[in-house]
Length: 191
Image 1 (cartoon, helix red, strand yellow):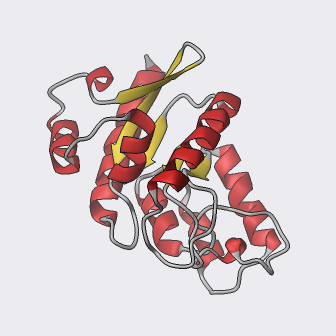
Image 2: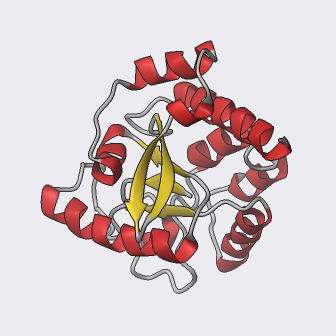
């Protein structure tokens, strides 16, 4: 499960006049490029972001690819923001209650929290992403010591912090975090 902050007006499926399926970060190529460069999604997916038009057919192809790769993308706060500003505490708290129910339904093996605000809301923890990335890159400790968790209904869900991949975030650092995480998770699956 990949958790972003909130949909903005840049998301083409978030417009009130859009009649199709809603998809977090639809049409925002930079986000999807990070996922492709981190080897989470196939390169062919970027073809759907080649031009600015967005439609239901593209949404369905992206969702089919996400399902094939067993990725679930969502937002902490579900309401669309007209501007790229952080939501307030009330919006985050309400969004967290909805997200917790979403986690219970999806039952992800892992959660990637994009950005410190999302990470803090989910885990109640704070950290320095630069230090965290350095720990991941060093490979000195096992993966189990590189994540935090959230417990819901007696199930612990591992939560991995990651740089926010677009806008005020850091796409290169987000890609590096995701690559290292993906590599470590693949090695665990092979055991």
